Length: 422
Image (cartoon, rainbow, N blue to C red; front, side, top):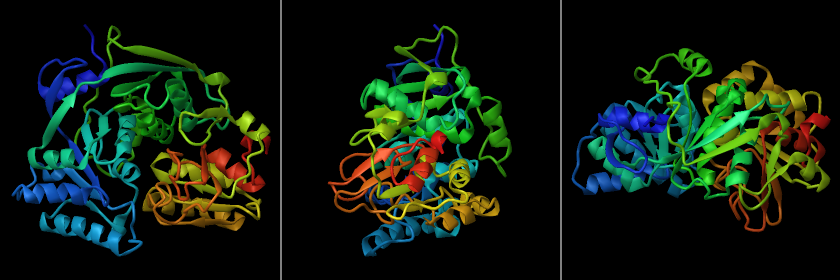
């Protein structure tokens, strides 16, 4: 029987053929922690009496949620991680000196690669599947076990084959494709399964689109999302200054076993808006326009859509225009490099001239942490990945999820707007 790409990655790591449903102990190529979750892992590591990391060059800490620190509690959280990183002379430690949102920064640095097994104590670790890796979120104590042993236990997931067909229309992006899949499956329709993204549409998706696509696999309950290595993957990796290791490239066999197949006609898809209070509550942008949804805040950023292409499309739409008087437009680049590149390209000047404010790279606004908190009854259209009750602030606020073009167009009109109408 043939194997899926996910089964092949585990087989290569375990040293024998494995299939969906098997429980295996696998080595891990990269363990990822952040300023919220790593202190819990460190506590378990040190209380267990352990003094050495099993694989120091396979462990990265990225301070990104509340950095620069917003209060004493977040400063002390970060201090725990800093002290541990300095004590162990950690090679891959990122704070204000070279900061970024972990799921944007690590691919940029060439630290996550095709064929890797990656875990992180953050649910959106599945982002890295865009590079042909198995990448998933785990709890902080699981991360500690990975720090101690260099491996962990996994149940090899069944795979859902998602076939995207057709060339996307203008302003239809990877964000819209994954919102459509979540609409079809619901928030638990892919529970503990792989979402393997295939089809002729993939050739039209940039790496930024693919990161968005895999980032939100967890919002359908999936264990991981994955896209096979191709020329676009190769171009991205070739453009890195260096790579942590050699890529290990795998492809699914023609006779691989899938538990489900979903086919989407992308050519007929319009931008998708996820209404409150679930990412699965997807509607076409035409409906949102008809519903005349007034917005108070527009947020473009996060590990889902804080990349250079997001600032490019926003700048193209907002060039020579102004943000509506009653709207706040907040922009958060995924990394310092993205901020610098967007500045060099003139996007930041264009966006600030239009009335936007630009923050440092941070997860802050996305999880209702800081810099973008919503007040009572306020409405935000956001390029983030979750729109749960109270996700970005007040429990009476509302969040609509959308791509960056829709968000930028909405900032101009003050209502959810189809960018194709501008």
